[in-house]
Amino acid sequence: MSPAEIGWRLRARVRDAVDARWWARRVEETKADRVLPAELPQPIGNPVVLGDVLRLTRESLVPGEVEEILRRADAAMRHRFTFFDLQEVHLGDIIRWNYEPSAGLETPRCFSSRIDYRDTRVTGDCKLVWEPNRHQHLVVLGQAYHLTGETAYAAEVIAQLESWIAQCPFGFGMNWRSPLELAIRLINWAWTLGLIARSGLPSGAVARRIAECAYRHLWDIRRKYSRFSSANNHLIGEAAGVFVGTSYFNYLPGASQARREAQRILVEQMQAQTHADGGNREQAFSYHLFVLEFFLICEVVARRIGEPFPESFRADLRKMSEFAAAWMEAGDPPMYGDADDGLVLGVGTAGQLGASVLTGVEAANAGFRWINAQDRRGAHATWVCGVSGFDWAARANNVDAVESLRSRAFPETGLFLLQGRLPGGE
Image (cartoon, rainbow, N blue to C red; front, side):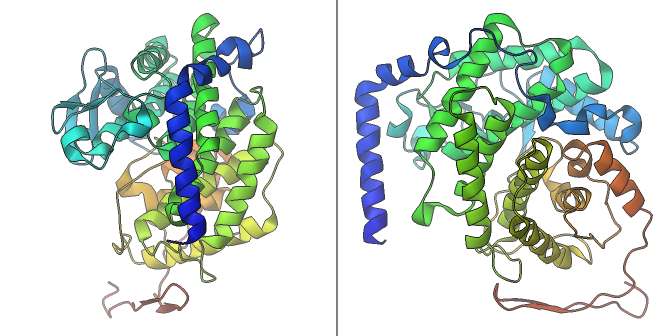
């Protein structure tokens, strides 16, 4: 560990100690009446962020997708969740947001920086707490409302957000422990609230509580951006959360400055964390797809709000996509390096993430062509890129799969792909 990193970690300890002593002041400084305009816009956020996602209809989706969305939404209405190896876990008539279901453990609700999330005796498996708190299932409820117009789905979104805010007070408990988790949650809030906007929800005092909480997410992430050996996918995710969050809640104080800062970080980290051959420097395919999803979402949002990334960013996005496509040319993605099956936006499943994100990059017109014909019309092409993404993917689906597979070298990443077709075509 370098002297600079040691200094950074010491300063973080001091910051946390000061926060613990003066947290009441932090709460006061970030209250709604101090940070929000007297009248919030209706809808609560910038609809441009979702673009022509809001033009999607049932006919925009592949056969069976509507039924799958409604199945998952109805499970979320019953507070039953499926993640990792847990199937249809019931988290309570009122969802217990601080609960670890595998260990049957209520996690601490003390000041967040005092929680050692690595101590399984205290928190159980931290990922089993954090996963439902990413609120990816709220996007599914938003999709269900958008496709059916049934207000019950939108009302359930608001009920769950209200219960989350009540059970997870600012700065306390596991769900304020990791800036990356805050960032992913913000991205899903933006998509969810955009999808239910025409319901008129949220409104009034509820809308102000949600906007206040969004501001606190942004405030906390920016103070705690990961650095040095902690950066990696965490810093990319944190900056992506700030970029999308300030694009959607664009009336919050300092939103423009925070968005420019986040965009600069994303450009820098795209270069710093990507080899010249397109491979991610974490040397793990799962994390390659994870950060590619962050980059894709931000690229699409940036163009919608009229603040596009530089061409160098798009060029690196193409390189990352070409790298991933090469390894998936013959089928399923490889498993090398670390993996946690992490997703960003709740519009698909881990099993379809690779093909889905690559199709999304195609649809974003980044100049990349995903050459494997299987599973082109993935959720990201549709629910990130919108109607144009669906049209692009539908056209691409008519292209025949490649007839030959060729071996490739990725010397900077240190990987070599040996592949070819057998005489029978396999």
